[in-house]
Figure 1 (cartoon, helix red, strand yellow):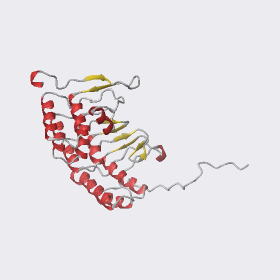
Figure 2: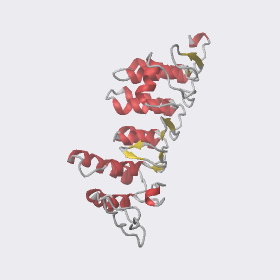
Figure 3: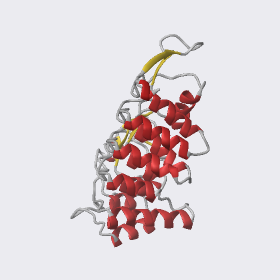
Figure 4: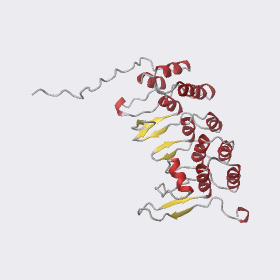
Length: 280
C-alpha cells in the first residue's frame, strides 16, 4: 500500500460505540496500531520490527502523539488494550517501545527501540501516564533495565530530567508535586525490607548511572512537598532522613554528600498533637 502512495503517517479519529457522551473518540495512526500489537503480544517479533522499519522509512513521525485526544476509551481492540496496559493517556512511540523493551526478553525488543531512536524519536519527551509524567529513561530505570537505559543514554537521554507526580500515589507513596530524576527513583525504590537481591540490583544500577554515565549523585530532587517545608533534597539526605542506612553507605561510596551544615531533622513524635488544646 505504501508503495502505491498510502500515507504512512495518516491519523484518523474514530468513534467508539457504547461509551459515555464526550469521551467516545480516539485518534489513531499506523504507528499507534503497530505499537498496540507489540505491547499486547508476547513480545515484538521480527515481523513487527520489519513493519516498524517500513513505516518509519516511509515517513511516519515517531514524535507524533499517538493518543491525541487523551480520553478514556473502551477496552476493545488492540489499540485500546495498549492504552489500558500502558496506563497512558498521552504518549508517543518511544514510551510504548520502552515499555515493550523492559517487559520482554526477545532480541527484537531493543531493535524496535533503536529504530525509533535512529529515526529521530525524542528521547527526552515527557509522556503523560494518567497524570504522572515520565520520560523513556524513567521507564527503563523503574524496570532496572540497564540495556534499555544504555541505549537511551547513548541516544541523548538526560539523566537530570525529572518525572512528575502532581498528586496521588507514586512509587507507593503520596506525591505532592514531587519531581525525581533517575538517581532519586533508585533511592525511592530502595527499602530496608527489600530482599538482598533487590537491594543488590538497585546498588548496581545506581553505580551504572553514576560511574558509567556520569549521573549527578548530589542532584536535588526538586520536591515541593509541603510536609518538608518545600525543601529539595539530595539523595544522601533522603536516605538519611528515611533511615536507609545501607543506601546511605552506597551513596557516600559513590561521592554522595550533604550540604554544609545540614543535619537530619528531628522526627515528629507519633500521635503528637498539632496544637495545644486549651484547658477548660
